[in-house]
Image 1 (cartoon, one colour):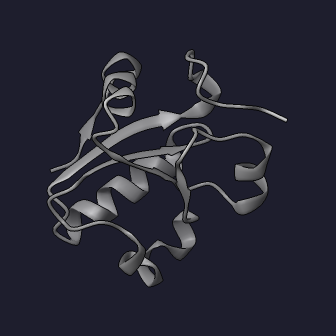
Image 2 (image 1 turned 30 degrees about the vertical axis):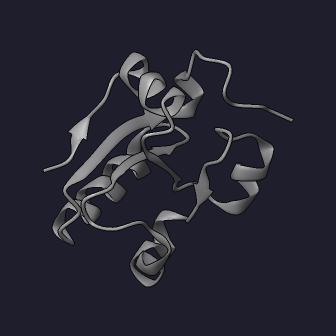
Length: 102
């Protein structure tokens, strides 16, 4: 089952480089600002691009703009057997300096 994760705990995972950061916004939103080293796979494309994700036991931190798409993506990944999925929610609320906005 996927879990909601606090910003503080997400920051720890990112700092430790111990997760795959999946940004499920559109490419246009992604280029406007994103967490460094995150990978953009829009939520609508996720089912056809699962081969771009790490193994099903890897930690995957999912984010989007406001929180809706990250929840949908986390639920979908959970249904596909991914075991360590964390829903960060929306980057509009992200208070750490990882997002470089243009």
